Image (cartoon, rainbow, N blue to C red; front, side, top):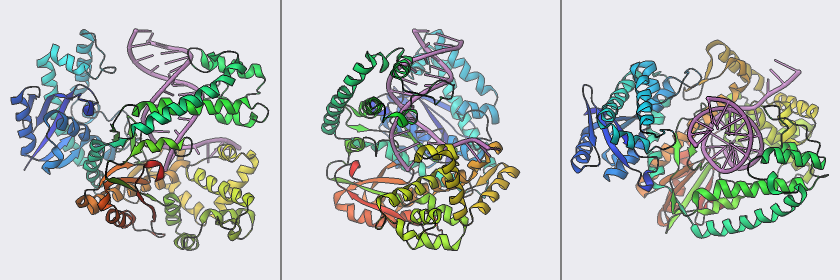
Length: 574
DNA sequence: TTTTGTTGCCAC
DNA sequence: AAACGTGGCAACAAAA
């Protein structure tokens, strides 16, 4: 079976809104081809070419699959061809940190395969300018450029397919055989594509209810603010940042924290310590919350039946995924968790939701290789209660969820927060902030926790040495996590988070393998959480299969564990 | 005018 | 001694 590289030229990102493709191009080992997808003949020719391939290579393949499905009503995934993606392959073979420059097709090609690629993207820019459109602003600009200069655009479309083919060939020589990462990514591609294509159903009734509710809350918070500040200039509109600052200083709020650029900061960390003396600050923070809720979470779903997010499989250098347009990975859970109730299963369907239980802590225990700490977690004891016990020199039982007094419960939570912060490489100032304790105390806390983690120093110095000598650490699956030598303190985080991200991807693959025959479709991936949609009749079976599929993604001591189950109502109840 | 940067804040 | 990591996005501000 032949290998083909393929590409589509499109009118925009909104394939689900009819912003379809107008050109399809493809390349085999020798030749390049292009077809006008707006004609029946061209569309057929493109479809036939795709169908003939045993291996298909794209750059950001998911997007082209969506475009092809939307334009030709032909689903590449149904054909069973092996899919490759040069964007993802490049990010594995030449990791972020090692590569300077972007992972765009033409940039990669110019660096590794053919220098003239760079000139072409500039030439398209020029053509766009000559007809007065901006490629950045309006994706439809590509269409307009094609209409104005069809021959040139068609030539470039063919070249894109050629570049993709040649880049793929080159990248194959750069993949490290000891690194399993690309194989994992490759299997994830079609699963994510299906998730994007299916999308998540929105309950408009709930959207409208929440919208009205939050608009009222916003109004309610706004009034006292306007009264105190003298006008609404301090809230929104031109000059509002300065106006707010002026108003707060006028009130006598002794702001002192600085932003990155040296201005006085007004973020919640800067405000919270003065709320007792100036209750209006609480109102301000509330108002911001309502405003954020409306603009960021309500707007993108207002009036939509289904949202189709776009997953970026390897965007983060740690290997984590990200989600955009809209970002489905930062829907509020604590602050305004009602937002999640807008996302619902389709009729007669349910969500089956599972997430890995404390995966970072488990991986930390695994890597520290200390039997006592491993055992603690293996036996299901609370590692944060243990840590609180170590810090305060008391038995851990006094800090467990069941036994702890409210004060001790607080101490346990501080220990927990600090654990997370440490694994992210945080220093004393940040720990002091998040726990609302003095900096000196935070420093002491960090020290005690590190000392109570048997094997922590050994692990950390091993990671630092590795970074200093080769510039990266390897995840459990061999992925290179390039770490700046100046910032070696993030090495532990790179290892833990990178490994966790890959476990999630393997879990996703196994869940798909185990449940696809039941009609289950993974819809959302939120770092350590997976949301699958399936018919209610299949729910029990899917739910029974998922824990094992997820937990066997990586064999470690202590073993992985998940929690979750069936949700019939909405995402908020997960 | 358009583009790019900054601030603040949501998630894990 | 000091250092929190990864993202996306809205709104505003400044530069081109």
